[in-house]
Length: 252
Image 1 (cartoon, one colour):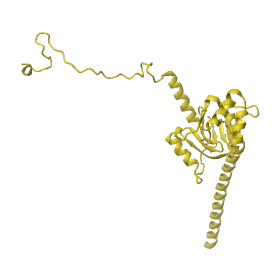
Image 2 (spheres, one colour):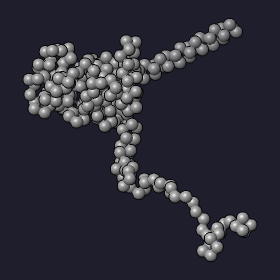
Image 3 (cartoon, rainbow, N blue to C red):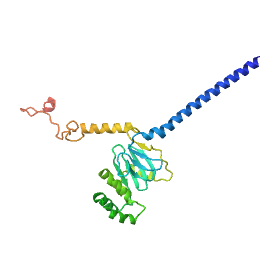
Image 4 (cartoon, rainbow, N blue to C red):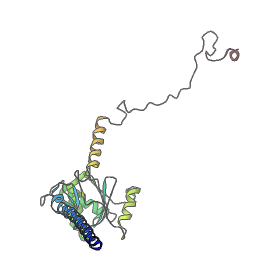
């Protein structure tokens, strides 16, 4: 009788353990299913500013072109990194620095010559691609057309650097790190107010604060008072010319 009760208790405990494991497995499955549905159907519908797609394309959704509702900045991203509210991208056309909050873009490519820059500026200013075609034939792998198209879209909001010394020490370090063959990108692919809300919010608050209370010499609240350079003098009596703060014994 005792053995039967022990066997029944053991079966009940085994059944409860299996039920608990099945419940845990079901919860984990439902959570994973939720994230899969969120990633495939929900997150792709949210508005964003910049995105690095699964096909390694850097896209700007803030602007539209004559051919699409977005602008493709880079068509082949090799590596990317997020640092200090900026997205650093190493691609076919060079090293991109994207300020995804303000939208300022910087391209560094030391292979660009003075003739290349003149052709790009001529294309942006006159819309003539004659010089651009000539330079493209010299170096077809550089694809100046893509760089010139981006410069034409962003104009003054995009800077092109050709000298390594123009990069800051931090940018140089990131540039070398992204070009390493062992580097693995772990930064987010999508950037926008809904994906980095605090960074956008803090930048907006700082911008408003700068407008209301600009730090310059014209604002008396921010003007630093310079210390007086004149020596400290003590008042003296007119009759004897003695210091009021000097002891009588020393004055005599």
